[in-house]
Length: 315
Image (cartoon, rainbow, N blue to C red; front, top):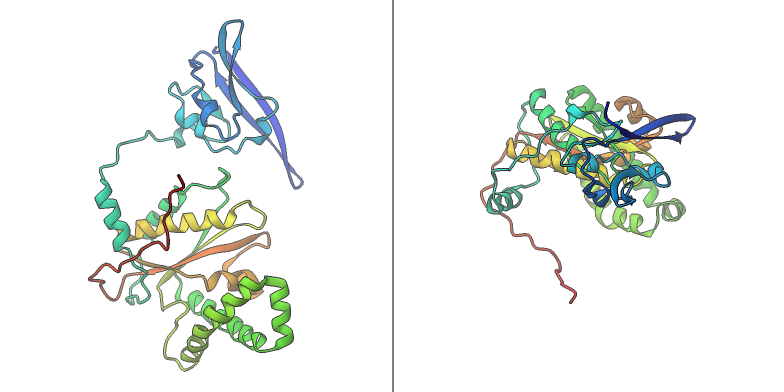
């Protein structure tokens, strides 16, 4: 049997306790030290013991393991394993037949789509978008991002109605000096200015058009949307959700599905109990990103110029 270095550690999460095992197969390991070099916390260590190099797991830092899988992914001998990751889940890296010009063109031609055909998206296509989101990186290495897909017209209609009610009430509160003061105290000046200067001027018309039956400018009459959610206290949970959503958006671009980031829906999902119940969002999670999607009603024929505000090199 191969000699192994096995390190166990317990990590408490609330009232639960889980045990993680990291193993190094000493018969396979060539002690190159690459695993420790790429590990964010340098948990694997290649040490010199009497003139002989040996790769071990740091007893002091093993509790910091993020289970990102970098050590296994980079190991040329397939000798190191976090027990939480299965061998069969690791695919071999392949050359990607796409050049820089093609990739830049894909990015430049991607547009936000806000008008959709009255045509459902097959779930097998939606599942491919989810697979793209599933491949997204996270800031902690943990896989805690969840996706809720809504393609049921009845649920979309109810979500719209409840969202409009929330923004109607928000508009009334912002016109009340006392309520406005407390919004500023609770949410901060930046959020208040965003609401007053950007969100609500357009929302005034959205609400009017919706109540008149002229259109739904919050959901844009999309046939489907995705909500990306994470635990309330997850480090960089919002960023993880946005990156996952962007992966789905770029896959949608390849598959000729129109998409649009929608920042109006997440606050409603997180604040309105009836919406939480409608979408099955537990009290310990929050929605951090949303994309509407469907087949584009119109075809864009030109690439809109876009430039960063500034680029500087510091010499």
